Image (cartoon, rainbow, N blue to C red; front, side, top):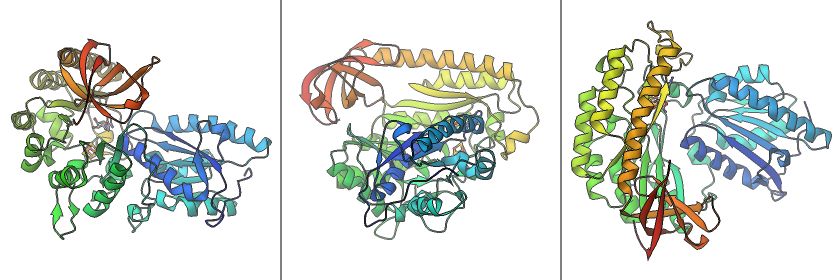
Length: 464
Ligand code: 5AD
Ligand code: SF4
């Protein structure tokens, strides 16, 4: 094994060490990467932009689709060269693989890439300091992919590095018990678990104190949230959001990702009653065919999804909807696919993600009969994406001429420009000073771009 950096002790913990984290996949991985950085800060690690400057590199992986493992091995090949070049210059590098590929294929990673020092699953990153120390001492790699009995959240440092730009993610729920036929998440992220209300409120309070205006609550099944409240009662997501808005003062709240089956009456009502809750909802339906929905083990019909959307729109008429779609699930016929197209036409989506079905080892659908040929999946995906694109363009075009509140999260591409998000999660660019970053301001939308909107400041700063 190549030399490892000496690990600073907790006492001498200020010695600066470079940390480079590469994040793939969902927002939960973005949150996890930030929290791994927080966990390593007391050891002296500070984020650096270039892997060549990093004493530790973490590759935080995603296993949800496509050739996840091959992508990891090809990236590891590149990082191996970085590690070797640094070793030649007399610097050690700890190379860690985290996330869902690490969870699912940890042993395989160590067998095929023996230059990796640490493999850790999503549930064990609170143990990183100990793993780094063990990697420095041991002659072999360290692997931690069990689901530990302790809750990692109880062991994370309370202080977080607050992202610039006024928007932050906050994981409140993890894991999934739904076992959709195609999905690897219940195996990589484990059983569904909710963080206690007090812990969520405390983290949100700190974010707000650091100027955060918008919090996106995260979970694989976030609307199944059922955290223990300070009063001993179990709180659902609607009650939690009410406290975040009214008690903690979070100006803008979003939540993702949700399952249609967990959309209860309180949550639907919150879309009408809670002004802090942004009028945008990502509610994956996956397919519009009852036959395919049943094969997917989704637990609802296409009509039940349509009815749910009607109830949500009755509560919040301007609600913008987003979804995930899978084409070519085993057994999907042309007629099933047409029913998905019809559901899209009936509902109307402001944006959506769509994928070709990709067999995940160990999931029920991967061994099912009726696998759909690749070229059929390609053709269906193209048709589906063309329709979704039309709907997205029409939705964005309808925003031109409207006044919306925008949270400015960073600089735009052009000098003198700042960019942010509308309540409907559209990207908006305006000419304006950097001082707007992290602030909410009213904007008149005047222009439609391919994937964003151009606006003019009204000069009136205020709440969403
Ligand atoms: N193949 C294709 N898409 C998948 N997704 C999850 N698993 C698979 C798979 N095996 C999609 C679903 C899910 C989103 C996060 O990824 O649409 O909602
Ligand atoms: Fe995967 Fe979502 Fe289904 Fe859970 S509900 S198994 S995370 S697709």
